[in-house]
Amino acid sequence: MRVVGQIPHPYVKITVFSYQLKYTVKMEMGQVEQTYKIRNSDKVKDVSDLSALIDDELINECIDHFTLMFNSMNAAFKRLGEKKDAEEKLAAQAQSE
Image (cartoon, helix red, strand yellow):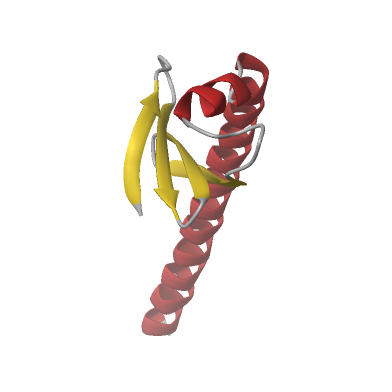
């Protein structure tokens, strides 16, 4: 897979890869990423066609998905912290008995 282009955006890093008659469009924002695989076709022949496909509406929807992904990960870290706190509390109680 090789990088064949980038689509400029102020908040989302968008990289286009090519491999075996397919394009992979990777969108990154912070610690999360989304990947779309698109077949080379009559409608999508090159990076300029992909730039037209990856319009503001799609990017904004991706940003909404990124927000959901961030929230899910933050919630998971919170649950992990609560589990660790509970385990430490139980360990402390067991030691004091």
